[in-house]
Length: 537
Image 1 (spheres, rainbow, N blue to C red):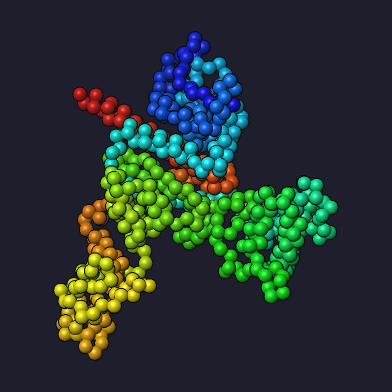
Image 2: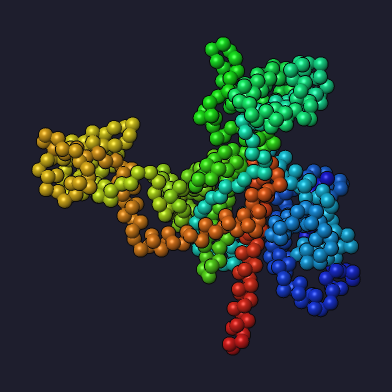
């Protein structure tokens, strides 16, 4: 299939919009499809996706990319599935107007158009590492930002857990399912003759219920040990090169590594629960999903990160995203975002919660012309008095205490970065900050432990009490509503795909739909204000 752009729309006498009644045409022009047709559809960069198709020009041309991408955004915007989207495009003139297809007698989409396009995106990203859909959604957000005149340098960041649709499994279920999948693979490849008698039961349809549910009254440990021993036996059967490329074999090796140990006799035994890492396999159907507990809630799946640009009159857009396994921390998302910027970047203020903070992130933010404002600090509290200690340029000695006293001696500990500072006893005895510094009395002096990190934290705590900081911190509250909107309206926890790369496609399209709704809100408010101004005039 060759790539071809879709730049023109030839109006015909049978155009489905022209043949509507004036009343219907007015309703269409006042609906969401007018803004989509005029702003979103023309902005889609078809050439970006040319790498998904052949360079040979005389092959059958592709379905227009702007129609596919536009349709997928409308699908998420209106809460449809693929079949409902196809029906809407074929039967609803609003979708045809939005996608510039009112002139066509037959709509250029089928029941497989969208799934095949997602498969092409997935295969290309897996091979090249390039996320075309992310580039397109961020390009559209930039188009929306310019259209809405959203030139603010204030941004806010937040993350949300995204649940995988895979079934929650116990350790026994995970190991059993992985072994069963491997045995089924051997069976499909015609290897029944190598299956031993103690492994044949995995081919029985009722075996899962017998092992997992019917024996619930029995101790789990013996069953766990038995399944692990059978897993080792299956692994030995699959050590031939003909099996190594299959995902069933790779998952079997992974499960044995994550769930088992070897005792002194060389037997495979289950690991203790505390030794199982959150990144271990949660379900063979979704091998990328990981486990994480946050805010008292357990989550198996992924984590999304959003950066929202804030404008006047309540306007805002999501202008950057991140998506990874839920073991990816907020602090790392902050580093990922800042690493894409440099010192020549336009100055901006990033407002986040405490999880995005840290001395390393603040230094990285300063290096790329970004002011990082976190509404809280993680870690131990530091007394504000430490902000007034003066250090040498290398940070390995204290040159002056808050009261202007010069230490007699400073010892630097490289492992902790802490300076042990000795100050004369007569200086500390009458000092009003003696209790705040928590100096330990010696025979001739007081020993105060302080570090550059403590100084930075104390300085930041002082900054948090300023009026400017409080005003900025209050602006962050609005971003907390985005995860709720993505869950309630865009069903972010019900993504119909497994795996990191596939589920991320749906996440990005939902972000695109969210931004389109923000664009509609901006235009609606603008039209209302224009109407009010005309009435006043």
